[in-house]
Image (tube, rainbow, N blue to C red):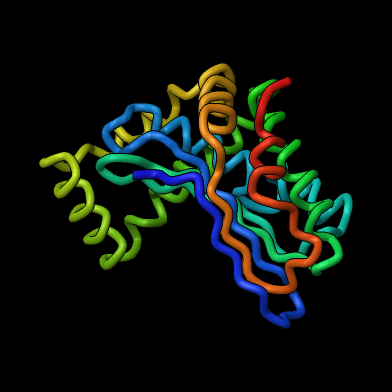
Amino acid sequence: IFAASAATEQKPLDQTHIVLNFSAPNYRDPRIYQMQVLSAILGGGMSSRLFQEGREKRGLCYSVFSYGTSYEDVGQLGIYAATSPEHTSELIDVSSKVMMSMGEQVTTREVDRAKAQLKASLVMNLESASSRADQIARQYLAFGSIPEMSTLVERISAVTPDDVKALANSIFTSKAPSLSAVGQLSALESHNTIAARFKKS
């Protein structure tokens, strides 16, 4: 069960570590492929929106990325960032705007790049026996069968920009996010203030 709660710990660290998690599709939901494309565009590497806005253009963080995980009852789409304490508030502001922009505009080029990235990851997993065994075990436990690689590729290929926008709107505006943070937190906004950034005006 997803809970929109907050857990913070004040520590004298050089960096402040922040995680925002959002409720997302479970692994039986066909939109999990859309979620993976969404995550790749949002924070899946140096060309992602979060990396470009937060690190390259503004220099607000040392590291930033997104991830999607799915379980039987619920999934989660999250972002992690490490920043200097004085940039905490600005980074959250910029990141929230980037996330909300995913529901407004997603280009075909971004989707195609994300899909190519995901397909390449599938192929690379085949090169490691341990990764392949882990993948087979997870699929069998979840679905009772092992889908063909071609089936997975087809499902990824079927994702469109409109699919990504619709899912982004659903994930980022339906429920408040959970917040986890550790470090020097004097500049960290309250959970309610952060959650309000994801409400459509």
